[in-house]
Image 1 (cartoon, helix red, strand yellow):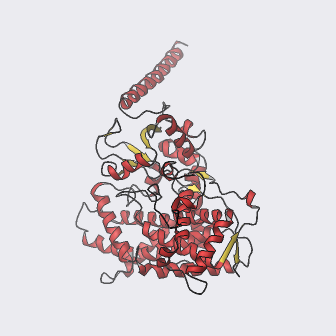
Image 2 (tube, helix red, strand yellow):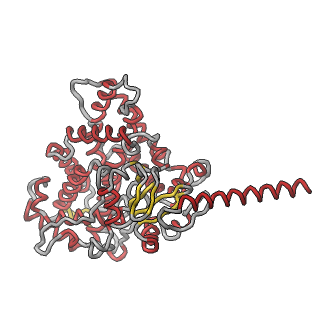
Image 3 (cartoon, helix red, strand yellow):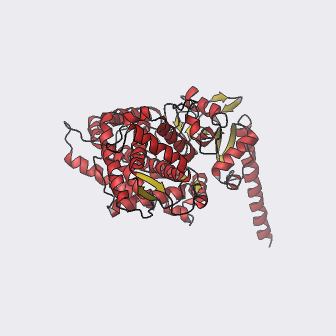
Length: 495
């Protein structure tokens, strides 16, 4: 009995010592850090974050603690930055200090801590510069890429015309259309909508991101070393993307076997040529692991986030038929029905341009933004943030900042139109983030959204099989990504 008592006292003493040590360490870390709620050992502030969902909770805490506060994602202190002014300061004004990628356990496992999205320092600079130049060489942001986007839009029209007015869930079709554009640049290939294997891969990707954005995915990001061994839905996040990664690996193997250094066909060829040029450099970032992770990420970004925006956009156009009617009128006046839309038409279509911007703002595809890390100690708004601290600039707080948008929670095309009906820019429009680490494919996405929306609306009127009062357009999950609800759409040919 005495031994048992001694063991019990020892365990209690150890637990007490651990708790005291945790809170002493916590207090020391926080002495000059921004304020925030007190964390629990191991779990940090997870319980507070799950009371109303991650994004609403982050915005609510900003009301209490101000635009700069500290949360604990597990044991990791993370500075949360909210609102247009503070986020702009982080991403643009002090961009070099907040330039590194922060800790994202889920994506570190996806990408093996490699590739453009997770690299830092000189490796990141070289990979980003190479990727920008190579993507531009293959048409990104140029008129030469307009034709493949127009061709893909034509395939979309054919597919929806063949539905013959029957309700259809277009989400995976939009994913395939978006993936085909980035695929043409990365691997020089287009996938047919009838390709069941590829469509299954895209659906798996959507399912994976729904899990990543759920409380299970958020908990994994906070305590990955525990969650990876526990049962639960989060264990499916990684297997769901294995087939996509295998497609990338197989494509790289095929490119290696057929590579002609004198005539590169796409991004993978160019990367392989650079690998060969630097194969004797032990410090090079141009290796196979970085290639796999970078292409894998570009596929996900090119297919998933773009299709999320399109899906939300379709739902909003159905919900607001008066907006759709005005778009039909503008398309008929500027383009007519006999020719395909071109990117240059955008300059004469202020209403379409404004609607697409408002769709991007309200759909808010990546509401949390991507976490950053400080490259050195920095004094920011009266607080001391040590080097290597994770910093999360919350993009949804910018896209819904009342100082920038008159009705931030409502769909309102006037956010991007002046009194004369001309398109106007808005400083709070940051769906691609900002600064040196902004989305590398912004110009490509802008082209896709314009041509896809304009082409589909030139041919069809979009309706829902359910009453508009019952049409749900709210995200089903809101974490790393806003997940659009699965809704059927009727594509009615215009007379």
